[in-house]
Length: 199
Length: 199
Image 1 (cartoon, chains in turn blue, green):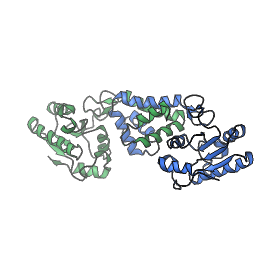
Image 2: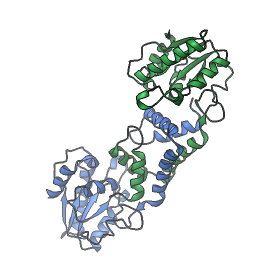
Image 3: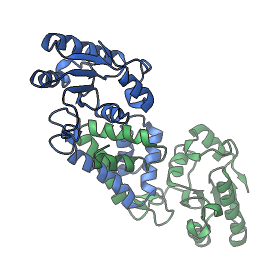
Image 4: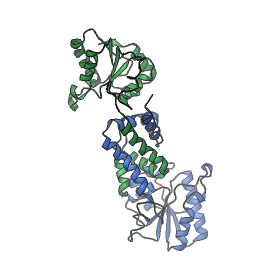
């Protein structure tokens, strides 16, 4: 019923998370209605982000160059590493202004049922950083979900063997269990960070 | 806090209808996470739709060439014209399989408060089609909202002067007032079409 280019756009839009068929159609017609310049600005922004943004060679956060802004910042404490699942979690924690250390982005959480095993995450890279670096504390800030908790436990166990001198902490409760770290408000997340406890 | 290309993408995404700041960030990180090919497929679909889709020279529906599929289809009754606000409304009505005529897309509804006057819509073009063509009936299928009703009244009044032999009808009630035609289900919309009444 739609012309092929319109149908293709609807299909591509409906691949986005939380966008169903009706919403995709609504967005497509919006893009058809607006000026060419505004629509192409979105297309170009997508293209640019895929071309210019990669992963930091140290912490696997998003980066415009070989290392991210935080790893390149000499004022950030290199002895303190906060481990998160996704780059968006770095943004959430930075927003609290409570954390002065560096990050390590795993790229997900352990979930054997979904086929996500330790080698699918940046865990070896994390252990490598800790073994070669002068790390004092690892704050495990994975989501307070089943998979996030399992990942935290895995990290704590491995570090007890590999680097028993490093203290491993976990964000304090205050985050409702089952919630998504990305949606926590700054205050709650800041308090959870301040009240972190040993695993 | 975000790298400039990421911030730019979030800004562009948040211009979409119904997409707030948090949703835009979530969509941006989704686009960063997925493969380059999938992300660029969306960028290309937007670009392609703006390059290949224009407006039909007859009815102002979306069209891949000079005229749309419906205007190019000789089996569609040229004596019956359904007037809608947006191209998406054509899709909604086509989905009912109840309408065998042709369309005229106004590009909006009269709304003096928003500065949308008759000359901002394809009204002169509609009256031109009716004066030169052999039109039997005009079904006014603008939205059952204040502005949609005002537009229907305007069309009915003008046609009473210009072409008193043409009957002007309006979609039957069945659509809840204040609702958006685009979201009506096929059955309700089909019934409203079948029960259209003279204005």
